[in-house]
Image 1: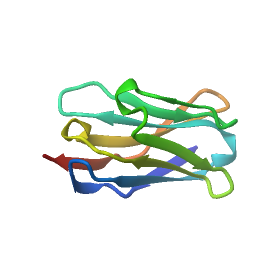
Image 2: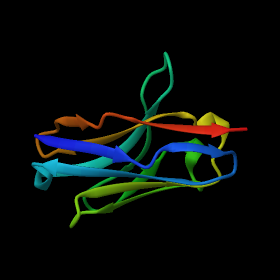
Image 3: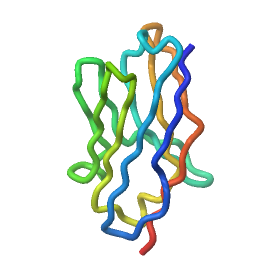
Image 4: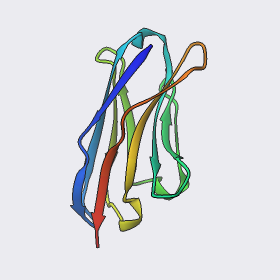
Length: 116
């Protein structure tokens, strides 16, 4: 079992920056990939950015060049640096981890609100 706890969300004006953090605990040694998803009211949960255990990253097209995902395996942390935020980035953001058995784990979610 892996437990994930997000932190760092909040309210920011358009054009501003926020940094999200996610701390993994439990069987964190078994984690292969970590990712950030986001979900708006009544919408599906969409992948924002993912980072594999080898450090390879992939991003949703709309955040490329603005968001950066990074990972500190020694600290069992994953981060999402969000720059030049837009109102459409307003969502609940979820930390995700996939383990060696391809099981998915989720954090509780954290609100990011971007005002125009």
